Amino acid sequence: MISAPFPWREAMAFAFGILRLSPAQFWAMTPRELACAIEAVRGREPAPMQRATLEHLMKSFPDGRRQS
Image 1 (cartoon, rainbow, N blue to C red):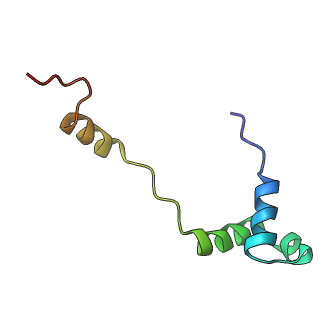
Image 2 (tube, rainbow, N blue to C red):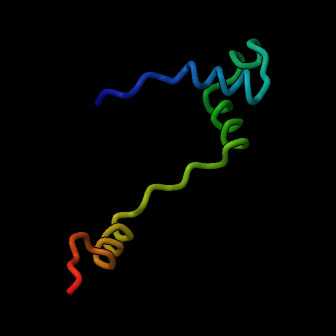
């Protein structure tokens, strides 16, 4: 499995522009510390939908339903 490269440009833009970190502060952080700082500002990403929830929604609201 190929993973996407780390988004350094976005991380640095957020750290310098939003968090107002100095370069020394940014480079001293671990990725986990940076992620926690970003989460404190943006909030936590919602959890992915569970399969059972998706199936329930698909049954409740099927595509292609024709009105007579």
